[in-house]
Amino acid sequence: MLGSLQSRAFLGFSLDGAGRTMLSRRRAGGLFHVGKPYWDGQALAAQIVNPTAGLFAGDEMELTVNLAEEAKVELTSPSASRFYAMADRQARIQQNFVVGKGAALEYHPNWVVPQQGASVEQDTRIEVDGRGELIFFDCLSPGRVRHGEKYRYQHYGTSFEIRYGGELRSKERMVLKPDQGGWPLIYPGWEVTFYGAVWFVSHRVEDGFKALTDLEKKLNKEGLRCGLTRQGPGVIVFRLLAARSLLMKNAFAEIRRTAAPLFPILQREQRIPQI
Image (cartoon, rainbow, N blue to C red; front, top):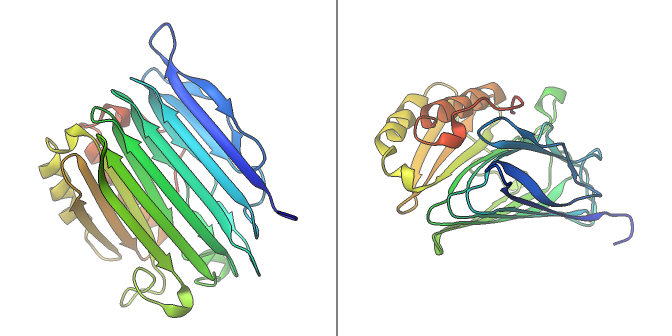
C-alpha cells in the first residue's frame, strides 16, 4: 500500500546440542528488529523492537513465534508500541504464538499507546501444547497522559484466541472507541484508566489456583481493581484496571513474584524493566 509499511517476522526457537534454547530461525525486517538473544542459564531472553517511531495509517505487522519442544523463552520489548494519527486507513497487527510440548514462553511487551487520531486493529492467536506453558502480559494506556493527551484515539480493536491442548479455551473481542465511552475507559472517580491482563496457560495452574485467588483479593485496593477468571482447566487470566501506570507496573510485578514458585520460567530476573 502506497505510503505504508507491511512487515512480517518469524522467530523459531529450539534446543541446541547442549540442551540450551537457541534462536534457530529468524526472519525479520521493516517494522521489526530483533535484538541479540541472551541465554541466562534458564531461558533465552530476546527483545523485539520497532525501529521506526511507531505505526501510521495502513501499516501492517505480522509476528509469528514458534517454540519447539522443551524451548524456554522470555520475549520482551524495551519500548512502548505507539500508534499515530490515521485519517483514512487503520494500522493492523497480527500475532501468532505456538508453544510446543514441554516448552515455556513468557511474553511481556511494553505499553500499547494509541495517540491522537489513531485507529488500530490487533489480532492475536495462541496455541499451547497440553504440556506447554505460557505467561502472557498485555497492557493498554489511555494515551500520552504525561503530555496531557488522553482518550484521543479513534479506535482500538483486539481479537484474542487461545487454544490449549488442541481445545479452544478463550475467544474474545474488544472494541474501544473513546467518543462512545464505556468499560474499561471509564471507572468512577478516576481521571483515566489503564488496562492490563495476565494470562497463565499451564497444567501447573490447578496446583497454584489457591495462591493466585488469594493474590486477586490482595491486589484490589485504592486505585487498582483486579479480577481472576478461570477459562477451563489449565487457563486463567488476571484482568486489571489502574488509575495510574505505576500501580499497574507494581501489580504486574506482584503477580509475577507470586506465580514464580509455580512456574520455572518466572524463577529468574527479567533482563529489562517492564512498563
